[in-house]
Length: 184
Image (cartoon, rainbow, N blue to C red):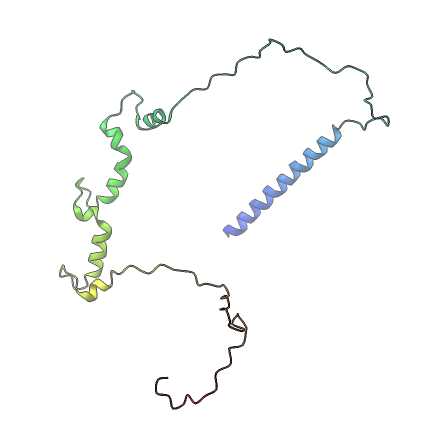
């Protein structure tokens, strides 16, 4: 359903962009200058405008408000805009992360709450709930191997090998009496 909606929105945007492009092109063509005279000269004999800018200066550009990175960082933490950052204002961004770790909501963070992932892994692996892991239980905590995509490339032929690429017939086997060889 989402693909259909996204496709419809994209099609409408594309049609709108085409319409604006088409309208803009038509306006440009209607405002184009007339073709030049066969002689190559301009139709009017009026002189081109000229100004002597010796010694003249234009207006100065407006001054930009220079706010440094540190001022922006300070303003982000100073919530009440009194020009001072209190300890509560400084620690406020970290409060949500603390509340997420404080599972029993007593505003005290125990070591088990801080190391919640390891504690959860331990309690999940401790099958008999005796507070210790045997070798078999510990083996369940082994990290899962990362997924590596299979190589889909064709191997390069070894020097001196014939027909070792993809789709090539296997090399002919050597003829000999391998039937009685105990090492094979």
